[in-house]
Length: 437
Image 1: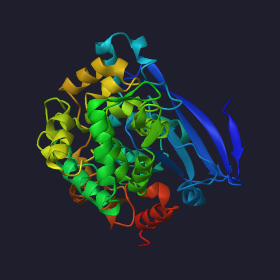
Image 2: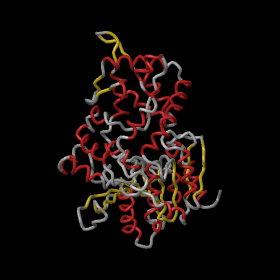
Image 3: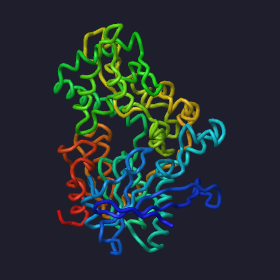
Image 4: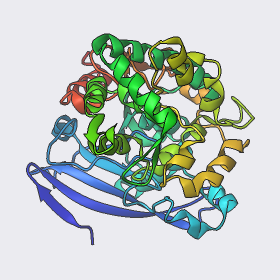
C-alpha cells in the first residue's frame, strides 16, 4: 500500500517500481525506482495532467518538498507532479561505496554503473508512465540541468510518451564530447572568478593565504577527507549559483582562528568546505560525471578524465604559478578530477571502478539528431546567458537542432533559476509551450 502524507497545501504519495537493470534484458536483474507524487490539497481526485520532474545531476535525488515550496507552487496549479529519484539515488536502489562492493570487484561495479545513464533513466520513466497512465497516456516533462539532458534523450528515444517538455538550464550539446565540454567550460569559469574578485577584491589575498597554507600543510576535514590546494580550488563549483559568490566570500571570512599554536584554519571553515566538497550524499555525481557525455558516434574513444586533461591547456588555473606570479588564484568549477577519489572518503572505495568507466569506449548514443530534427512535441527551454555549468553556445545550437523548440534566453538568473525564481521561470515556460507568449 502506498504511503500518503499531508503537508500544508499538498498531499504526497509514495510509489515504488521494479525496473530492469538492463532494459535490453527485461527478464533479467531488477532494481527499485522510487517516485513521490505531489498534488495540491483538495485536488487529490481531480483528473490532472501529470508532470514528471527530472532532477539535475547526475546522481542527484529529487528534491524533498516542504509544502508548496519553490517551483512546485506554480506547477501544482496545473499538474499532478511526480518527483523521480533517478536510479541509484535517494530511495531508489542505492549505488554508493556501501552498496557497490556487493556487486563484486571494480570491473563488476563499473559494468553495473554503465546502466545508470540518461538512456536507462528514460526507459525507467517510460515503464513508470505506462503503469500510472496506461499505454496511451501522455505526461509533461520538466528537466532541470542534467534532467534537461535526460529530456533530450526522452525526446530522442520515446517522444510518443510526452505531451510537452520544459527544460531549464539543460540543453546539452548533441555532438559535444567530454573534451569539448571542458574546453568550453574553463573560460566560463575564469569569467566567474573575475566577477567574484571584482565583487570581493579582498578575497584575492584571502584565497592566497589559504593556498599558501595548504601547499605546506593540507588540512584534515571533519569527515576524514583531505583539503588540498586542488580541493580548495574546487570550491569554485559554488560560483555557478545565484548566491554562490556571496557564500564563498562568507566562507573565506571564517577561514582563520587563533589557537594555542597560532593561526590555523578554523573548524567553521573546514566544516563549511566539507559540506561543499564531500560526495557522500551523491557519489554518482562524481563517478558518472564524464560518462554523461560519452556517445560512440561523437567520440568512440574513452572520456579519459577529460577535465583533468583539458586543464593542462589552461595554465592560469595553476595555483602554484599564481602564487609565484602574484596573480589571483583561480577556482575551478563543475569538473571531476581523479584526485577526488583519493581525498574524499565517500569516493575512495570507488576509485578503481571510476577509472574503468573513464577508460570505457563503447557508450551508446544518447541523442538521435534525426528524430529531434523531426520533433513534434512542444518544447520550451530556459537558457541562462551566464550559465557556468552548461555552455550557452551549445544550448542555442541544440535549440536550433530540435524542431519547434522555443528558447527564452535570460541573464536574470544563474543555473539555479528554477529553484530561486519563485515559479517565475516555470510559469514563463508553461505559457511559452502553450503558445501564450
